[in-house]
Length: 98
Image (tube, rainbow, N blue to C red; front, side, top):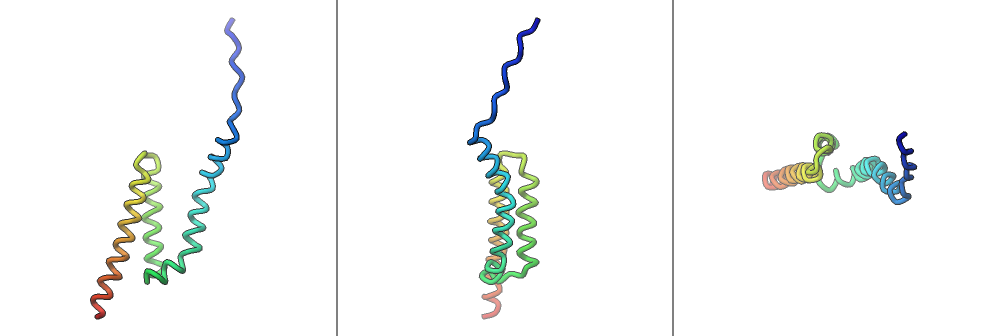
């Protein structure tokens, strides 16, 4: 006869809080982007379509790289690249207008 299986351990409260925070991070980030979109568009002089394109690229990169350890680096570099393009456009636009 086989011995009985050991009793299953319950997850700790700390683990449950970490999982709760991880589940809330995505919606909180979306809310933050939506709430600050007007200010970002005014300060960077971009249209809503351009901001939407940047956010689409960032979220697509996160979706593709989400299963890998380097996912954060891919998302951060995509964000910085998009920000660089927006800032370069503003710089070239100012130089051409002068």
